[in-house]
Image (spheres, one colour):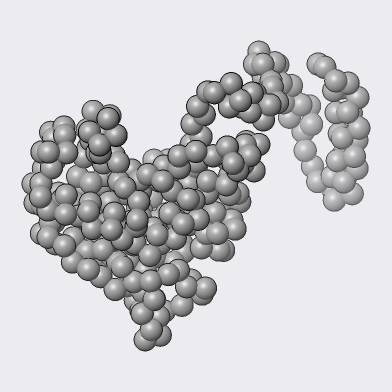
Length: 275
């Protein structure tokens, strides 16, 4: 093991053992060390690098880097719905703080969102549907945790929160997923503002735990399956109207829509204009 690892490990081990003994904490260090050193041997097969240098070297050579964020904007530790957040930056800036990419090196920012809203666990959710409609979205969209199987909270799309996310991330293009989940609805609702203590606002309030009542716009549903559609020309007029409405509200083009769970069920938009 390189870089004087054994000596450093021995020092750290002695330090923490003193703390554990002072607390009368019982443990089996022999068994723990066995598993730990086995893990180290496993990791030695991989080449460890200074990733920030590698990434920036590729950027300088003209390569494109695709960074995938984890979790949603509203879970960001600084800009999310605190305290119902995660422990890191989930927004676009996380590529800078987490990977060492300079802000002026960020190019396109793709914002991925569902055609409706979901939330896992506690936290504010103004458009949550605690009725048959919410249950239908949950069942059709298979909105259950992949590990725990826990039912996700579901509701209509919240354009106030989505506009906030677009602003914080500097989103340049949007990608809408799970459009097919809304195929059977006669009416589609979209939250365009909040009513907070009798005042209508179209921005995210300072007090996210305030008594927020969503203000909805109703749009006609398309009531047809889009599962086999492969181009924008095939999309129902009502669905296209929904897309144009969202784009007008958000100020960002929706360049990709998903109409099913398979990779092939993805439709690109504006391709002719770009060509």
